[in-house]
Image (tube, rainbow, N blue to C red; front, side, top):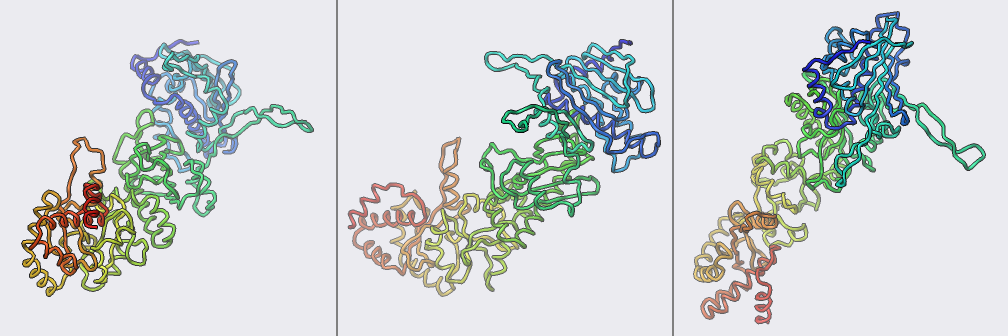
Length: 633
């Protein structure tokens, strides 16, 4: 036996491996299985040109064995094995990757998937083991060797008897540590000796290692002709091996896609659609993406975590990679698998954001194109999607000062006065009559409330369609867009709607001048409540309405004032009280202006409160409003 010390640099790195580099201790199993897969891949690659390798691809496997009594976990592969020199080079020198060297020296076909590139994954075993023993017999060698270490103090190498080619790694697990009174500081290393825990870890991280991972599992069954149960041992293959996304699309049924989604994404319902992508170019990746049929209960809360699973060569690297999805497509579920990613030393993070951004941009285009196809070819399904996630698309337009509007605007739907159906902006444009140069909309609490607004009468009489904005973000998003296909958005609640003919404008101006004194008295009475009082040319059957001037509408102000504010201040839209000069109430006001200023002031306040109610706004003083009604009665 030869006793050796790690180099000083290796000692520091090993200490980091045990305490700092990996986020979760369970990662050790992924790393050891990946190493075993690499060893098998090397021998399989050699078998393609060397007749001396008397093994078929189906003969290769990785075996896991847990002994709770001895507190050992053993991983065995029948791969290429290691010589004494290789044991010292690969295990005695930390961060020396034999797999990376093998990839450089050989021109590998796509059928070979060497995973390792850093040569540090093996040492993650020391996070859970107090002693690691490696027994290996290299292909073509007669003598086997054993490497053993208890961590930073060094390692030994000696000969050993081993009859089969390959490597056996034996972990002697650390003792469990009890938590303190507050529940802190405890460590349960015994969990890695539990067969079901091991099975779940293989399923999570190594399900798509392309060689079978086997383990003897204790199961129970009913005895024949008896109600009693007996235990038996069954050798179980723990992994699926062939990733669904690596199969040809024509080999996969719709049911297989849907079952994969429900299993991987934890949903009980089938998705609306799937996207199976194979991208080849400057960066190659496979992706399997799904759009759910409903929003998770916490989707529109800060607790929701977006992201796609990230694999490299079928090995799970990140369970939720947020950077692969923009916020406005955060509803998408699924995974991305790429062998071109530059990972950090722990394989838990990416080193180069440029690679990720490139994949993310490609995925973004894929999602948008799929949604556009769905809107065109299956409108019912798209509207189901939109009911669940349309709000997120609108937030996407509003965020970042509208920089994503070109990407998202064609995906929007709004309720409309046209047949009471959801409509896209393009469909609205296509239906516009000749001479219409604006896209008209009205914002309110509900479609029913909006349809009762006095301001909609004139627009409908002109034959113009109105989009109904019933969600708080709608008007904010549209303000960010400003235009669609060079058509400006115009709120029907804006004081400057400007739909009157020249003759109607002239008549209104004359009446405005004749009502100058009345309007001044009413404006003075309502000072601080409205910016101005004027006659309106758009009201038909209603006596009064409220409109707004400027960039902040009444609905936008209501939304902002409902939000938590650190300053505690309230924003106020610049409102205009509009009177219908053709309504009998107008003549009553003119009479009072000449005879009873006090009564006129009461009527002005009453009309203002009525206008608030019509607009769906709260009356400022309900008691005073009630008293005015009673006095009038």
